[in-house]
Image 1 (cartoon, rainbow, N blue to C red):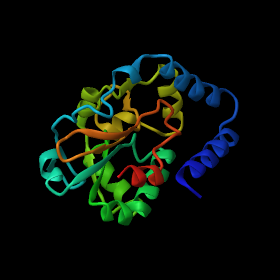
Image 2: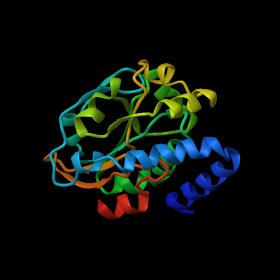
Image 3: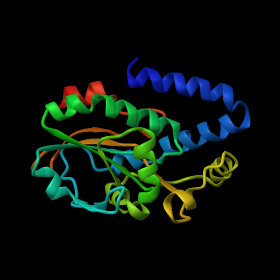
Length: 211
């Protein structure tokens, strides 16, 4: 199955596991985000990607300029290791890593989670690519990807055992859109996948084709 098919199956199962009001709250939050102008303002294909220097899962700083010396970058944002859609997407990217590398590109994942939590995600999913921590969502904010969760969704997440304060180290209750970019060596963005619905992600097949 493609990642797109796996995500749809996961979403269908989620509706069965959390029917009624929980499902209504989650769907309403997506609908409200879709009604905003967030996508009109995001950094996208044709734009220049901003410089960054972010810590990896062991705290070592990784800079955009350093990564680009090796070639193109496939950069994907994910919400956290608590998100089943994110874990599914990360595993699919890991499976596609050899093909991405064969295209001369480096795969990087970025999350607002603390390095300790991102290390847990890396080990749990057996990931061989770097995960960088976007502390306080500063990079996501500069790209226009950041949004605040509705209060009722935050309460619902807490009832599921999802604590963003513990995950991110702040209590802003903000998350990035799970966007994916391809960045060329001149820092120009040549591909983007940016959708408000967190259940939808860039399929590795599309990423490889774009490379």
